[in-house]
Image (tube, rainbow, N blue to C red; front, side, top):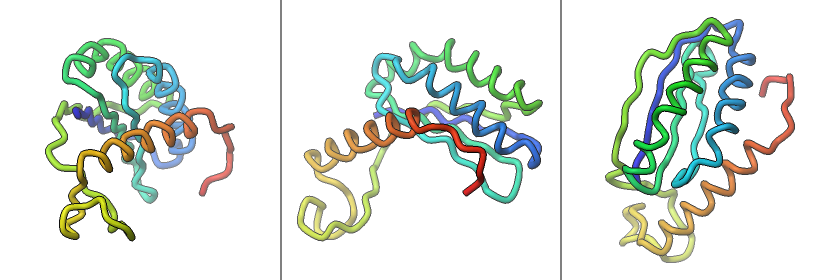
Length: 140
Protein backbone atom coordinates (compact mmCIF):
# COMPACT_ATOMS: atom_id res chain seq x y z
CA UNK A 1 0.00 0.00 0.00
CA UNK A 2 1.16 3.55 -0.72
CA UNK A 3 0.31 6.87 0.89
CA UNK A 4 0.40 10.58 0.22
CA UNK A 5 0.66 13.01 3.13
CA UNK A 6 0.09 16.72 2.55
CA UNK A 7 0.42 19.40 5.20
CA UNK A 8 -1.28 22.77 5.20
CA UNK A 9 -1.29 25.92 7.31
CA UNK A 10 -4.65 27.63 7.80
CA UNK A 11 -5.63 30.50 10.09
CA UNK A 12 -7.14 29.06 13.26
CA UNK A 13 -10.33 31.09 12.86
CA UNK A 14 -10.88 29.51 9.43
CA UNK A 15 -10.39 25.90 10.52
CA UNK A 16 -14.06 24.90 10.15
CA UNK A 17 -14.09 26.37 6.64
CA UNK A 18 -10.85 24.54 5.90
CA UNK A 19 -12.30 21.20 6.95
CA UNK A 20 -15.21 21.80 4.56
CA UNK A 21 -12.85 22.83 1.74
CA UNK A 22 -10.73 19.70 2.19
CA UNK A 23 -13.84 17.50 2.51
CA UNK A 24 -15.03 18.90 -0.84
CA UNK A 25 -11.61 18.22 -2.38
CA UNK A 26 -11.60 14.66 -1.01
CA UNK A 27 -15.04 13.98 -2.47
CA UNK A 28 -13.72 14.92 -5.92
CA UNK A 29 -10.80 12.53 -5.48
CA UNK A 30 -12.96 9.67 -4.18
CA UNK A 31 -13.57 8.07 -7.58
CA UNK A 32 -9.90 7.73 -8.46
CA UNK A 33 -8.70 4.26 -9.45
CA UNK A 34 -6.75 2.61 -6.64
CA UNK A 35 -7.82 4.96 -3.84
CA UNK A 36 -8.11 2.87 -0.67
CA UNK A 37 -9.29 5.71 1.61
CA UNK A 38 -7.93 8.57 3.59
CA UNK A 39 -8.29 11.10 6.35
CA UNK A 40 -8.35 14.85 6.88
CA UNK A 41 -6.64 15.58 10.20
CA UNK A 42 -6.53 18.78 12.25
CA UNK A 43 -4.49 19.59 15.32
CA UNK A 44 -7.57 20.92 17.13
CA UNK A 45 -5.78 23.81 18.78
CA UNK A 46 -3.81 25.44 16.04
CA UNK A 47 -3.61 25.96 12.35
CA UNK A 48 -2.37 22.64 10.95
CA UNK A 49 -4.30 20.41 8.58
CA UNK A 50 -3.02 17.14 7.13
CA UNK A 51 -4.55 15.10 4.35
CA UNK A 52 -3.59 11.44 4.28
CA UNK A 53 -4.62 9.18 1.42
CA UNK A 54 -3.93 5.48 0.87
CA UNK A 55 -3.45 3.92 -2.56
CA UNK A 56 -3.39 0.28 -3.68
CA UNK A 57 -0.36 0.79 -5.94
CA UNK A 58 2.39 3.31 -6.55
CA UNK A 59 1.10 3.72 -10.11
CA UNK A 60 -2.41 4.61 -8.86
CA UNK A 61 -1.00 7.16 -6.40
CA UNK A 62 1.27 8.68 -9.03
CA UNK A 63 -1.53 8.81 -11.63
CA UNK A 64 -3.67 10.85 -9.22
CA UNK A 65 -0.98 13.46 -8.51
CA UNK A 66 -2.01 16.12 -11.05
CA UNK A 67 -5.63 16.11 -9.90
CA UNK A 68 -4.63 15.87 -6.22
CA UNK A 69 -2.23 18.84 -6.56
CA UNK A 70 -4.97 20.96 -8.12
CA UNK A 71 -7.48 19.98 -5.42
CA UNK A 72 -4.95 20.69 -2.63
CA UNK A 73 -4.13 24.10 -4.06
CA UNK A 74 -7.81 25.05 -4.55
CA UNK A 75 -8.83 23.91 -1.06
CA UNK A 76 -5.99 25.82 0.59
CA UNK A 77 -6.66 28.98 -1.46
CA UNK A 78 -10.35 28.83 -0.56
CA UNK A 79 -9.40 29.62 3.07
CA UNK A 80 -6.28 31.71 2.34
CA UNK A 81 -4.13 28.82 3.52
CA UNK A 82 -1.00 27.29 2.11
CA UNK A 83 0.25 23.84 1.15
CA UNK A 84 3.45 23.47 3.17
CA UNK A 85 4.60 19.99 2.11
CA UNK A 86 3.62 16.86 0.20
CA UNK A 87 5.23 13.45 0.67
CA UNK A 88 4.69 10.23 -1.23
CA UNK A 89 5.36 7.19 0.95
CA UNK A 90 5.09 3.42 1.05
CA UNK A 91 3.30 1.84 4.00
CA UNK A 92 5.97 -0.34 5.63
CA UNK A 93 4.01 -1.65 8.64
CA UNK A 94 0.36 -1.42 9.56
CA UNK A 95 -0.16 -1.11 13.30
CA UNK A 96 -3.42 -2.47 14.66
CA UNK A 97 -5.22 -2.07 17.95
CA UNK A 98 -5.07 -5.11 20.22
CA UNK A 99 -7.60 -7.69 19.05
CA UNK A 100 -9.76 -9.69 21.41
CA UNK A 101 -9.58 -12.85 19.29
CA UNK A 102 -6.64 -13.99 17.16
CA UNK A 103 -5.57 -12.58 13.82
CA UNK A 104 -2.49 -10.69 14.94
CA UNK A 105 1.04 -11.95 15.19
CA UNK A 106 1.83 -13.05 18.76
CA UNK A 107 0.29 -9.98 20.37
CA UNK A 108 2.57 -7.57 18.49
CA UNK A 109 -0.26 -5.61 16.88
CA UNK A 110 1.22 -6.38 13.46
CA UNK A 111 -1.60 -7.69 11.33
CA UNK A 112 -1.78 -10.91 9.38
CA UNK A 113 -2.62 -10.49 5.71
CA UNK A 114 -6.28 -11.55 6.08
CA UNK A 115 -6.85 -9.11 8.94
CA UNK A 116 -4.97 -6.46 6.98
CA UNK A 117 -7.39 -6.93 4.08
CA UNK A 118 -10.37 -6.52 6.44
CA UNK A 119 -8.82 -3.30 7.81
CA UNK A 120 -8.39 -1.96 4.26
CA UNK A 121 -12.05 -2.64 3.53
CA UNK A 122 -13.02 -0.99 6.85
CA UNK A 123 -10.96 2.12 5.99
CA UNK A 124 -12.59 2.32 2.58
CA UNK A 125 -16.08 1.97 4.09
CA UNK A 126 -15.36 4.56 6.80
CA UNK A 127 -13.95 7.04 4.33
CA UNK A 128 -16.92 6.53 2.01
CA UNK A 129 -19.32 7.16 4.91
CA UNK A 130 -17.27 10.20 6.00
CA UNK A 131 -17.48 11.71 2.53
CA UNK A 132 -21.23 11.02 2.38
CA UNK A 133 -22.02 12.49 5.82
CA UNK A 134 -24.11 15.67 5.80
CA UNK A 135 -22.02 18.68 6.66
CA UNK A 136 -22.49 20.25 10.05
CA UNK A 137 -21.47 23.69 11.15
CA UNK A 138 -20.92 22.61 14.74
CA UNK A 139 -17.42 21.82 15.93
CA UNK A 140 -16.83 18.56 17.78
